[in-house]
Image (cartoon, rainbow, N blue to C red; front, side, top):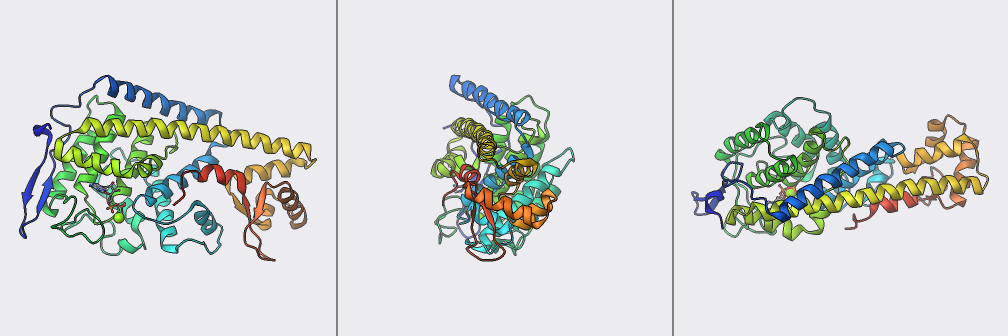
Length: 383
Ligand SMILES: Nc1ncnc2c1ncn2[C@@H]1O[C@H](COP(=O)(O)OP(=O)(O)O)[C@@H](O)[C@H]1O
Ligand SMILES: [Mg+2]
């Protein structure tokens, strides 16, 4: 236990105790033992390898869009959103999704929040204004979003199992009147020109943000979005390729209990090690996935040649499927600039070869799924 790093619990009117953290950086500062050194350098390298891959990747933008969907889905699933990747793809293809529309909406919002955050070019990514903008996009039109869209909370909140109260909560974040000041301190730490390694810094920021819990809802997702914003802004990733949430979801209990140990033991190092382990694991996995996707593309081109499905249109259809894994004949016609009949013939050939599969079961307005590709991206997103 390192007492000087620990915040204080302050008794509130009503008898419960709210927690007020110490400002960052931890004091004494983060202790780099051999393990932490090793993990940091391994995480840096894993991220660099992942980032480097985008240079050799054909049509990198196509994959990136799918990776963003995957992160959006997983980050939303951590706190119970029950959507699937295929549900998202169905929704984007104007089908009635098999998942709950509210859950789909949350994931779509997350994707939009990601795009909006990445598009912001102002030098201070963590200003209150940006936080509120992103929050507004994230919770727009969702179940939890009515009360406090884009607003820093003015009431006390708490974290705990469903049905828990302020008196039985697992954790009670700071009282609302303290939140603006704590966010200002966090912002000052973020923009401070220290020489802290960026991965360590964002690890600290994420945990502190979750402790402050500045919004009524959406704090987990906001905190995870900022990890990606930060990595991209710092030039550590050229594109938002990391879906850390798969790791946080798989180790959810540990994620939560390590946050608690920061608060009540002053143990930042265990959290940072866990966080870096996650970055290493997910970067390596994303890299392996990308290799599989490249191999899939080569295999498909080879299949076309061997089966005499030739022509530029067939090759371009493969590219289209990587960008848009659910398509109609009309989509293909307009994307490839060909008329209905050749588009239809192409679809039939691709279906016979097992590359795409019809998913509506209808006679008209058929839609086709690029099966093998979705299977690769979908891994780990089962609910
Ligand atoms: N002790 C804790 N137990 C559970 N979650 C915690 C704890 N401390 C912080 N959290 C964070 O709170 C998030 C949930 O808060 P919430 O505002 O509902 O976010 P969201 O709606 O985005 O899931 C978790 O994802 C986690 O990041
Ligand atoms: Mg929530």
